[in-house]
Length: 117
Image 1 (cartoon, rainbow, N blue to C red):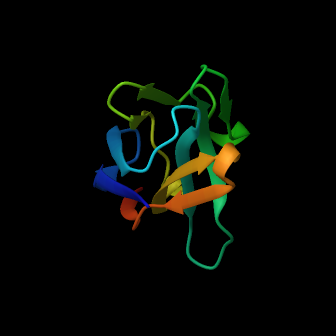
Image 2 (cartoon, helix red, strand yellow):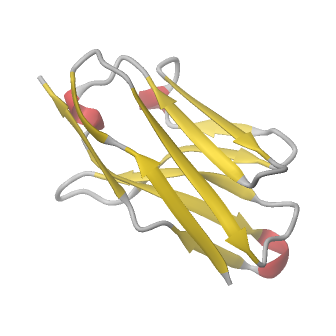
Protein backbone atom coordinates (compact mmCIF):
# COMPACT_ATOMS: atom_id res chain seq x y z
CA UNK A 1 0.00 0.00 0.00
CA UNK A 2 1.07 3.54 -0.77
CA UNK A 3 0.17 6.46 1.45
CA UNK A 4 0.16 10.06 0.27
CA UNK A 5 0.29 13.06 2.58
CA UNK A 6 -0.45 16.46 1.09
CA UNK A 7 0.25 19.89 2.48
CA UNK A 8 -0.16 23.44 1.29
CA UNK A 9 -3.12 25.05 -0.37
CA UNK A 10 -5.31 27.77 1.03
CA UNK A 11 -6.75 31.11 0.04
CA UNK A 12 -4.83 33.62 -2.04
CA UNK A 13 -5.62 36.69 -4.11
CA UNK A 14 -5.29 36.61 -7.87
CA UNK A 15 -1.67 37.08 -8.88
CA UNK A 16 -0.42 35.43 -5.73
CA UNK A 17 1.49 32.22 -5.17
CA UNK A 18 1.01 28.96 -3.34
CA UNK A 19 3.06 25.81 -2.97
CA UNK A 20 1.68 22.30 -2.65
CA UNK A 21 3.68 19.37 -1.36
CA UNK A 22 3.03 15.65 -1.34
CA UNK A 23 5.01 12.85 0.29
CA UNK A 24 4.59 9.20 -0.63
CA UNK A 25 5.41 6.28 1.64
CA UNK A 26 4.82 2.56 1.79
CA UNK A 27 5.34 -0.03 -0.95
CA UNK A 28 6.86 2.23 -3.57
CA UNK A 29 8.51 1.14 -6.78
CA UNK A 30 11.45 3.34 -7.68
CA UNK A 31 10.08 4.09 -11.15
CA UNK A 32 6.84 6.01 -10.96
CA UNK A 33 4.96 9.15 -11.91
CA UNK A 34 4.03 11.75 -9.36
CA UNK A 35 1.97 14.81 -9.95
CA UNK A 36 -1.12 16.86 -9.35
CA UNK A 37 -4.66 16.88 -10.64
CA UNK A 38 -7.42 19.33 -9.76
CA UNK A 39 -11.17 19.41 -9.74
CA UNK A 40 -13.20 22.58 -9.87
CA UNK A 41 -16.83 22.64 -8.72
CA UNK A 42 -19.06 21.06 -11.33
CA UNK A 43 -16.13 20.01 -13.50
CA UNK A 44 -14.21 16.82 -14.12
CA UNK A 45 -10.86 16.18 -12.53
CA UNK A 46 -8.06 17.33 -14.81
CA UNK A 47 -4.32 16.87 -14.97
CA UNK A 48 -2.30 19.87 -13.82
CA UNK A 49 1.27 18.58 -13.92
CA UNK A 50 3.08 15.25 -13.70
CA UNK A 51 6.72 14.26 -13.49
CA UNK A 52 8.28 10.87 -14.14
CA UNK A 53 11.13 9.43 -12.06
CA UNK A 54 13.44 10.00 -15.01
CA UNK A 55 12.37 13.60 -15.40
CA UNK A 56 9.84 13.82 -18.20
CA UNK A 57 7.24 16.43 -17.32
CA UNK A 58 3.75 17.28 -18.50
CA UNK A 59 1.76 20.43 -17.82
CA UNK A 60 -1.77 21.42 -18.65
CA UNK A 61 -1.75 24.20 -21.22
CA UNK A 62 -3.61 26.45 -18.81
CA UNK A 63 -0.76 26.39 -16.27
CA UNK A 64 2.31 26.41 -18.50
CA UNK A 65 4.64 29.23 -17.58
CA UNK A 66 2.96 29.76 -14.21
CA UNK A 67 3.27 26.42 -12.39
CA UNK A 68 6.40 24.40 -11.79
CA UNK A 69 6.49 20.79 -10.67
CA UNK A 70 9.50 19.34 -8.92
CA UNK A 71 10.24 16.08 -7.19
CA UNK A 72 12.80 14.48 -4.95
CA UNK A 73 13.19 10.84 -5.92
CA UNK A 74 15.15 9.97 -2.80
CA UNK A 75 12.42 11.34 -0.53
CA UNK A 76 9.47 10.37 -2.76
CA UNK A 77 8.08 13.86 -2.65
CA UNK A 78 6.56 16.10 -5.28
CA UNK A 79 5.94 19.83 -5.06
CA UNK A 80 3.89 22.19 -7.16
CA UNK A 81 4.88 25.84 -7.14
CA UNK A 82 1.95 27.90 -8.37
CA UNK A 83 2.59 31.50 -9.37
CA UNK A 84 0.42 34.15 -10.97
CA UNK A 85 -2.66 32.36 -9.72
CA UNK A 86 -5.99 33.07 -11.36
CA UNK A 87 -9.54 32.58 -10.05
CA UNK A 88 -9.95 29.75 -12.55
CA UNK A 89 -7.21 27.85 -10.73
CA UNK A 90 -9.61 27.41 -7.82
CA UNK A 91 -10.39 23.81 -6.97
CA UNK A 92 -9.41 20.78 -4.97
CA UNK A 93 -5.91 19.66 -5.84
CA UNK A 94 -5.08 15.98 -5.58
CA UNK A 95 -1.68 14.40 -5.37
CA UNK A 96 -1.27 11.62 -7.93
CA UNK A 97 1.03 8.63 -7.74
CA UNK A 98 1.26 5.96 -10.42
CA UNK A 99 3.40 2.85 -10.70
CA UNK A 100 3.03 1.35 -14.16
CA UNK A 101 4.85 -1.87 -13.27
CA UNK A 102 2.35 -2.53 -10.48
CA UNK A 103 -0.61 -1.12 -12.42
CA UNK A 104 -1.33 0.92 -9.32
CA UNK A 105 -2.57 4.47 -8.91
CA UNK A 106 -3.03 6.30 -5.65
CA UNK A 107 -4.72 9.62 -4.96
CA UNK A 108 -4.17 11.97 -2.06
CA UNK A 109 -7.06 13.20 0.04
CA UNK A 110 -7.14 16.56 -1.74
CA UNK A 111 -6.31 20.08 -0.65
CA UNK A 112 -8.38 23.16 -1.38
CA UNK A 113 -6.93 26.04 -3.39
CA UNK A 114 -9.06 29.16 -3.61
CA UNK A 115 -8.02 32.17 -5.66
CA UNK A 116 -10.06 35.31 -5.10
CA UNK A 117 -10.42 38.02 -7.73
